[in-house]
Length: 331
Image 1 (cartoon, one colour):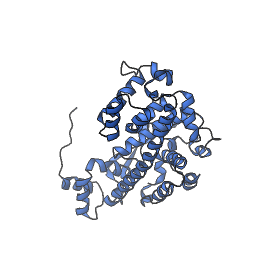
Image 2 (cartoon, one colour; image 1 turned 90 degrees about the vertical axis):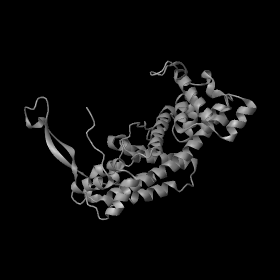
Image 3 (spheres, one colour; image 1 turned 30 degrees about the vertical axis):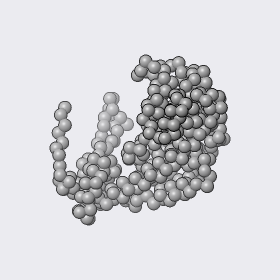
Image 4 (cartoon, one colour; image 1 turned 30 degrees about the horizontal axis):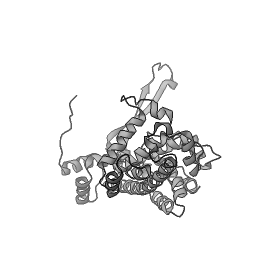
């Protein structure tokens, strides 16, 4: 099937939005946003403002009233009272949220580099290359898409990161000592993805030793946290919409006796699939790494400043935050 939508000028784009019941109080400013941010990117932020038409879906049996299901579908028209400026307010809120999250993840990434390199480095200077010092599944099972073990795939990624690096310390160590680089050197070129994969491939004893530092006794659970945070990092790094995103990479939760605050998410499937829980995880890790950090307070204030969109049914609840989210945040 061929693509049917045609190119539109910025003015045509704005006229289309106005024809669909979106209010524009400052046309020049609205055009400026369309030129700088783009229609398609902004469409993810005005989607919640679209009018939803309800319809009845019949089940396969459809023999009695209980077999009828009422569903809804987003139309092209916007809800009454929708303003272009409200869409921009939501966009700016999400942008600042991503900046806050990126700041915290940077600190977590740096701390994890130390945790992993120090733990494995105690075993061997080049432990990351030694299959006997990593988990057997990681070093023997093949990646389903490649005829290589998970460890071999990871080592290829590591080599790429080293080759691409233009850091002076990498050039110095390669020139003076050759390859491979010592783990406490090479860890500085690893991104969050490389860190999370290597942690997942460590032996359980080393995993547990690191996880316990963060109040989690089971290193396999902590490995799912790192995968989720890597997903979060990618969302932020690619400037993607975060505030109401469905989280594909959901983490496992530890026992209540270890982290009592997880009780708010254990039975709430919607909350586990939204970013508020990941923000709470970030807060927990950051308070271990740097208890004096003001990040938690700054992020709480930002969430509390969610744009005034209650008239459209929008708020922090779409982020998976309950009515008592402030109390949950402070736990």
